Length: 578
Image (cartoon, rainbow, N blue to C red; front, side, top):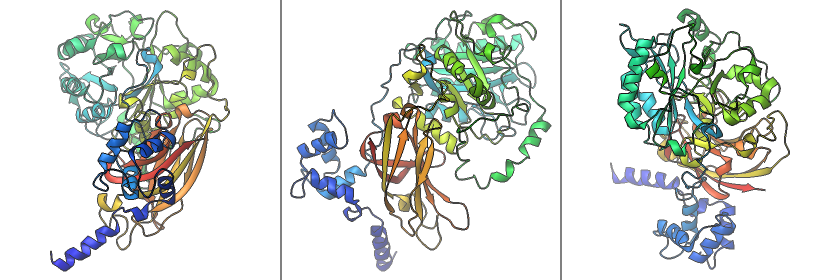
């Protein structure tokens, strides 16, 4: 590279390097308020952190660590440049790094649990490979419920994992179990639940029991064949594997499913490639047509020993820690609460939507003691997902998602389980557990708090994206969408103005979000690159649990479509609860 070329490149890079000249006016005013003669001392920084950032327990030592982290800008105290670098740095995240802090000693039914659906699929529901790789990836991300569909292998003497009635290629159960043991507790020490969708004869069930016992050994939690009156707690089950069963189901023929795949959903794929579908709105009445849904979970009651299909191998039955309920009769029967035993019930997203219209409070009552699993409707052959809030607002613990895809609904799932140290278990709000006054999801509540969000500016795209990624001949045209995913009354999206031709966009716009149920609300953030003739380009996204959102000016890292954190891309934002 010639000296002239190097000089041009160096100057070009400097143009997009964050400097104090880009600091928002609010940052400059705050610095003036908490500094003297252009310098912020340790004591002044501590006062800023307590009064402005609402970090009540911060110490002088904490303030000193901040100064040390940016000391190459100023030796002993903070000047404006160092203060700005601190605010926009990784040391100032929007969520507190406090680890697991919820009460983990309550029954499992008191928690939302990070749950996967068809966890072994690498892609679509019809023809992708089955593998242990997506299982490993899910466990690394913190997923705590892994679903395995188990079938006889081609020679009928072993057990495979595959999506039955489809063209998916199988993977050996043994390989999946070994990978689960290796990666189960990489991201979290809290229990991993295996939901085994069983399509086996008793002799193969006995083989599975032998495999599971040998591979997991002492970490397998086996309470015996009797149902328990109350589920144990996550704390008591740390580093344990739990088995929950689902008996055989009937599948439609591959041809029938393929016809659904070839329908109207296909044409939308290209325009939704970057973002996924907008999260379905829960406002208004829910009109549901689920007659064509595959009866994925026509479950028999594992403890009643239904002989109409076949008997269950006794050693296999001994492994069952969370018993699946048989769906007999109608909703009233399904949702009955038995004081002498607890169980798990599974409903498709469509069944839940229908039930929510007429039985909302009964679902909440059921989930106070029992576990409800919600799974995607069968026509989601592209492995897309639904709005998880419909399950969470009714207390459903296992809102099962296809983890191998991407899109807005999945970003909400990522956001919810950033809470509680990312351990995969989030304690449900008290109002969902109150047995004296059952929460009614249909009632609009008064505003409890209002979140004020200021979107100041963004940086990092110049370093994390190719310089012609957004536009071949000019800098990008960014705007930010910011809003709430929550109960219907709280859910909304707003957006900033479009800033043309700027790698360092500065919007400086405020938004207010009244919240009736802040405990279930997630802050949605997306950065779009506007394209007049085509769909917007993807510029980053994140979802943050509002229950753990820190007040003050914060640096908000953005993620890719797959939820992976970018190296440099972030927004500077302010959060206030008023």
